[in-house]
Image (cartoon, rainbow, N blue to C red; front, side):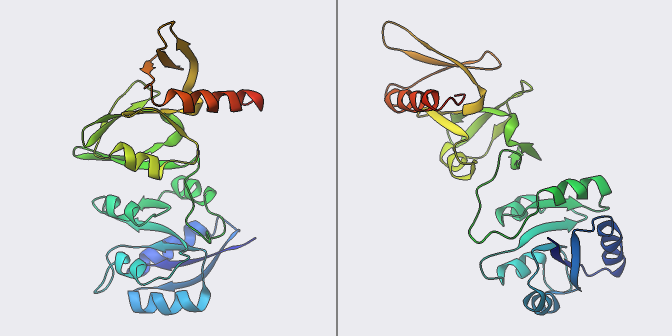
Length: 244
């Protein structure tokens, strides 16, 4: 199935370059181009693309203005810009990706691997997706599969990654639960989420205390209020032969 795309950029050279890069992907059909928001809305309504490559700084308005004028269901949006300072706002718009100019062919190919038909309802992220996080003055995309656990620290959370690093993130535990892939985390304590796939073993004491041990050897206590739910979940997984 061909994937119709719309390219929106106010620089003709940028439009030409994106056409050149997309020519290497025969599954992508360029349905139209636009250089400003009004034109983009008209072309979008006429072509109904699955995918939009969207510059942020346009003539008189921005790419965010374009997104704000679209109705559900939204197409996949890939922001393409020379500036990284808009990344947080872009991902707040549920952007599929954020490409920096000049766009590299291999980076574009990675983005296109994640494109399918536009969602009819908002989709939860998948294990192979990345999550955008801001750490002090830095920001980066981290694959979900590299996250072992999330630990609450007030209004912040400590992310434990499988490379041993533990960045502090301005995001609450509640927000992590809302944006994570379905079934990715198990809440084992009021201040602790653990990736289900990262659990290596469960240890229990005769006093009734329980500890989760992850694949990197870290130990996380299980809150008493969470143990009954976790025990039922582990029993369910064991019955169907799935790993914890």
